[in-house]
Image (cartoon, rainbow, N blue to C red; front, side, top):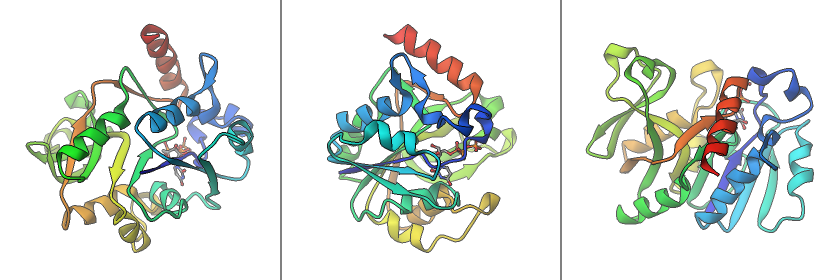
Length: 235
Ligand code: UTP
C-alpha cells in the first residue's frame, strides 16, 4: 500500500506565516506536524509515501530528503484536493492523509487498514462525529450501518443525513485514480476528491469508520492552538 499526503495548498487561512513556512511544517512539540502524519502512514504499513508539494514549499522537501520511501511530486496549480492526489501518479491502493489534519489519540490510518480487511479490501473513509449544529461546515455521510450510501457537502442542519463527517483520512482502491482523471471541476472550480468518491460509490462499496482519536485541523491558528493542547495532553 502507498500513502499520499497532499501538502500543496496555499495556506491562506494561516497567513502571514505561510508566506515562508508551510503550515504542514509548524511544530507540534519538537517535530513538524507533517512528520507526525508520515509516522502515522508508516505505522499503517505504507511502503512508499508520496508528499505533494508546490513551489515555495521546498522546506518540506529539505526536511524529509534522505528519509527512505518518501517521494515528492509537485502540484503546479492549486486545482483542488482531487487534483493534488492525481499528481502522485500511483496505480495502487492508496492511503490519503491530509497534510494539515492531525489525528491525536489513535493511529487512524492503521485502524482503517484493519477495517478495510474486514470488508474484503473495500474503501474506508475516516470520519468523526460532529455537533449537529455544525454539520454545515463538513462533508456529511449518508449511511446504512457503516456502509456509505452518499456524501453531502456542507448540508443545512435540517437536511443533514447524519452527524458523521469526513475527517482527513481515506483508504481508497486504485480505481479512484480512474475517476479522478475524468473528474470535472466542482465546488470552487476545483477537482474535488469527494466528487470522484461519490461516483465511485455507484460501483463499489465503501465504509465509514469513526476513529477514536480527535482530528485537529492545523490549517488555521485556532486549530493549531487546539492541536498543541491536545498533543500535550496526550503525551
Ligand atoms: P485545504 O483547503 O485545507 O488547504 O486543503 P489550503 O488550500 O492550503 O487552505 P487555505 O484555504 O488556503 O487556507 C486540505 C489539504 O489538501 C491540500 C492542502 O495542502 C491541505 O493539506 N491541498 C489542497 C493541495 O495539496 N492542493 C490543493 O489544490 C488544495
